[in-house]
Amino acid sequence: MDREKMIELQMLGQQIEQIQGYLQNMDGQIDAITQVLTHLDEVNDLKGDEDVLIPLTNGIFLKGKLSDKDTLLVNVGAETVVEKTLGQTKTLLESQKNDIEKYKADALVQVQELFTRFTELQGDLKRG
Image (tube, rainbow, N blue to C red; front, side, top):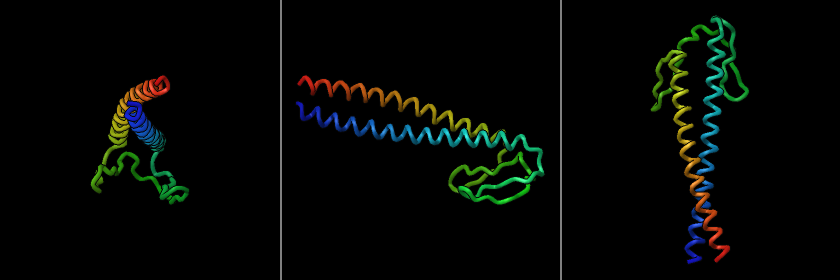
């Protein structure tokens, strides 16, 4: 019986670690979306035909002129890019952020349930 509990305890520990990894990943995704939304607000505040820096990769920029701040090209998956307005893009990102936050809340409930069972098993094994 104790052997079965030890195996279950190990499995629960692994599941908890895995979900915690997912939670960290979701936090990173939420932060990235929040940052993009902030940048979109900054773009919206531009008057147009202004000099801008276009990031190519981390720390490398291209100088350019902003000619159309209201139309964005958005990758919607499967190497498909569509035009969206700034408002449509913000709505899309906010929806993605809300979905991730919902998944995160569900994962938090799940990890709490697993942790409760983990603690119970630890107690059983100590008494046992």
